[in-house]
Length: 217
Ligand SMILES: *[C@@H]1O[C@H](CO)[C@@H](O)[C@H](O)[C@H]1NC(C)=O
Ligand SMILES: *[C@@H]1O[C@H](CO)[C@@H](O)[C@H](O)[C@H]1NC(C)=O
Ligand SMILES: *[C@@H]1O[C@H](CO)[C@@H](O)[C@H](O)[C@H]1NC(C)=O
Image (cartoon, rainbow, N blue to C red; front, side):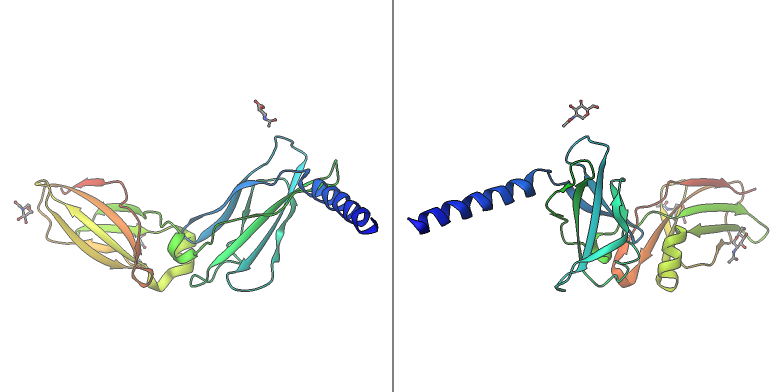
């Protein structure tokens, strides 16, 4: 009898406890979106309430402890830039988000992101390409985004594609951050150029930039 009563009390306690925890629904679609090794966690809010705040934590895969993302505690926005703490490209990371309602002083359960690898999951953006005709030939200046150059400086390469009028292509490899000079080009001829960023160390490359065409004098 006593045991039964105790069971009922415990059950009552547990269900109250669980009810309190699930009162605020958790954020959904927690995931990293990463371009050029800028790693930003995004999520979908559980309700429309504009008074919701979020807390973000992260950890390295295999480590036991979750760490607070310092600039993303009690924030209103629905994303958090975790680039500075997820900067080791060889690691795997997790992050999680919880919603907090200041009005009802309740908080949601944590929602976990899928495992994230800066190396494998980041998308490399195509470089910008400028071309000008000089005495020496066509000078091609190719530049990856500033963040990518800062992070990968010595291990960045570019492929520059020279597309001839007959659609045949030539490829030139250019190291970061020097210009390519195309010499011995035919006069009064249109050449179209595209470029692609390559990170050989990570076996990664961007798509090609849109074509820029230039006519020799
Ligand atoms: C959220 O807001 C939109 C438009 O403001 C509304 O149509 C929708 O029903 C709201 N959803 C919830 C869950 O309150
Ligand atoms: C296309 O044009 C280039 C440059 O004029 C030439 O070197 C190449 O042989 C041509 N290719 C074909 C398939 O005609
Ligand atoms: C590349 O070319 C641009 C424009 O012609 C010039 O401003 C720049 O200094 C050059 N860069 C290098 C590394 O030579």
